Each structure stands twice: as structure tokens, then as C-alpha cells.
Length: 215
Image (cartoon, one colour):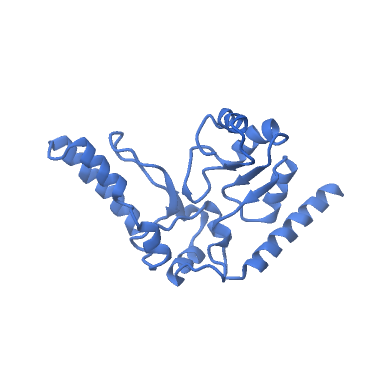
């Protein structure tokens, strides 16, 4: 759930018979909405966590955060960025290196330049491709102003700009012009390690946090 009003959407989905919900905030990588994970969790968990399992996602990189959301009533969490550099990940070495070098501030949301040219917000690491996308939007907007391109064609050009860009980065290793989709938890990805070790660390941190609160 990314788009407002989140609570009403959650309740509508429950009425339609969903088995579970994933509540994902704007800190997440890839396509995002406008509301932070912590705000969505506070809004939705108290209202619906007793009706269906709710999993919280977006910007989660440590077990202490997992424990906090479990305390709030979540059934679990969903993590993506934290596992991008797992040993088992098929991501290109260039892609993994970009993650390992990045900090939270490097994972930014795409910007819309002109209201006539809608851009679906995506959070990814800053690179040359992102800068060129901004330039492309200005170029297309100018063409619209000059009447040298129709609105439908202009919007299509913007929509198709990133086509295949995620594959170029993840599989082909083009980290300059591909899409480096990453959540703001990317700064907590500090080394390439097996999935089992990542999960073990997260579980240990979460268990320690829960034990401390119980004490």
C-alpha cells in the first residue's frame, strides 16, 4: 500500500477478501508512494492487524526495526535492499559495488519536471541516467511548448525512457545508465554475505531488542 488514503484502501482490500497486506513506505526502493513507513504503520496496524496479517516494508535494514513493527502488531516485514548484495544474488558485480558504496542519501526519488508529463516516483541510486532523465523531460516539455510533438507522443517518450533500465543495471552491470533501484536502507548494506548470515543477523538483533523490552 503506497498511495493515500492508505487506511481506507487497506479496509477495502480486506473487505474484498485478501489473505494479507504489505504496507510499504516511501523509503523503499523501486516504485514508491508519498508516505513514510513509520506513518503508514501507525495508521494501519492498530486498525487492521487483528483482521489480516500485515507485513511492513520500506527502509528496514536492522532487526531492531523489525522488533518495533512486531510490537506494533505487524505479522512480519518485507525486505529487499538488504538482500541485494547477498552472495546468492545474481546481480552484476558492478550493481553490488554501487550498493556497497552508497549511503541513504544516495537513494533518491525520481523527479517530475512538468505536470503535463507524469512520472511515477521511483527510488534509486543517483547516477548519470537519472540526470539524463531530467534533461529528457526538459527536452520533451520544450518540444511540447514549441508544438513540434503531440501530447500523447510526449508522454510516451517519458514513459518509455526507463524501459529495460533495471535489467541493464542488475544483469548487464550498466550502473551509469541503468536503474539502480534501492531503498534508503542501502547504507546498511556493507558487505556481500550469504542470505543465511543476513537473516541470522536480523533475527539476533530483533530477538535482543525484544528481550530487552521484556526485561
